[in-house]
Image (cartoon, rainbow over all chains, first blue to last red; front, side, top):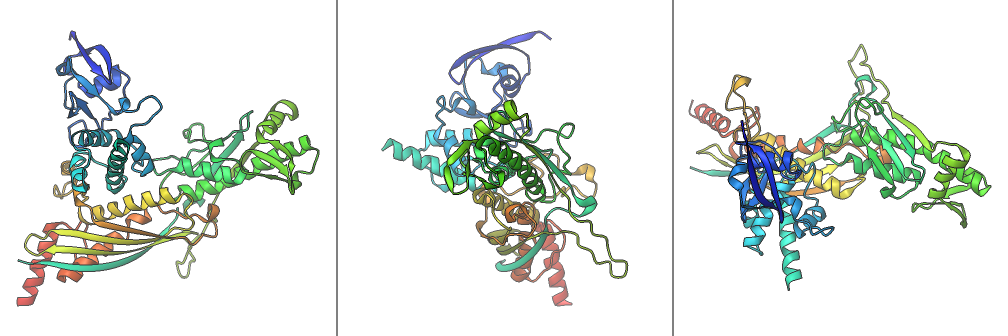
Length: 160
Length: 337
């Protein structure tokens, strides 16, 4: 089958690749563009480990075809840190011990980032709803909830 | 209809590791030319933090900062033998092996430093931040960096050590069947509070209050993290996780996260954790295995709380709404008969 070209902005950089038609965005990111931060947990949209942002909206990259992303702005967890300086969510996940095996972490952080961008001062129920599409096996979720609340507090403190 | 509330308690003893075949784990420790240390294991870090704990244990034993230690869990083709990461054995078994290996490496390190300082090795001590000095005379010192360089390029010595841990074998007594399946036990107790809906059979866990006796907590924050996650898993085992409702054929078991149920972030019980530290006799720095033990007491505690709430004993896991309803129907049939 002839390959087709896909071109989009990934974490601020213009990227272009040739992929088989039907290639998922997850596969294109991981196998072609060397961004392994989105994880393939279930490949059917049930676990949230592959969550990325496309044009500011949360999307499951395992259910998104790469060829539908032409011209899009795509953000992944790999693009959150500013050089050596971690994103407040990344720092909060570290400080709150919100990861064990870490497989769900990139998806959790993207879900949380989307929440904080539209609601900088979420309460616990907002956080629970924001991460309810993401499965975690290790932490029992509570440390993740606390980490997101911690990041929100850190943001509001630094903004003040 | 009525929603009934109940409270249940349960306690467990949980063995660390197992007895079969002596449950061995081996470890190798060696220094680089610049005085950092490498621990080689076949034990696996699944996310529980084995690498961090082994680095702490090695660093504490040799007398260097934890940052100076790298842990390579290698693979079973190239690493020293380990039975595996299971049975809550990693910290205890691999930790003991690492202590033994690190002690041997420390001894060589002090012998080389003794040559360099022209003193007796038994008169030397480490300061924990990268230096070796004469006891009582901190100014008579050499850095571990220089000691390693000297070992590699001057004395031709390998600052290294071998360690292994093997549980004394225990065979059942012929007369009584008594044996010692484990040398080290962790303990836990949980009080669970539930609500049971007598109309739907649905059980909601309102709170779990857990106390865990885990020997010494070698990294308290990581222990706490594992206990919180484990407590959640215990509730998940009690009420959710199963290959049903596609029984009786396992072919029809849950195929994905939509069918294999677990409590999500919106289903969390109020969870309290308390840690008791009673150092074990044969654990590394007194540690026991907190891993699986922490997901056990919630299960009988929830079952007992359901009994307290509605007077039925559900003895098959998970305690699904269907099982609760069947038990309630049986209870009511018995009452009218």
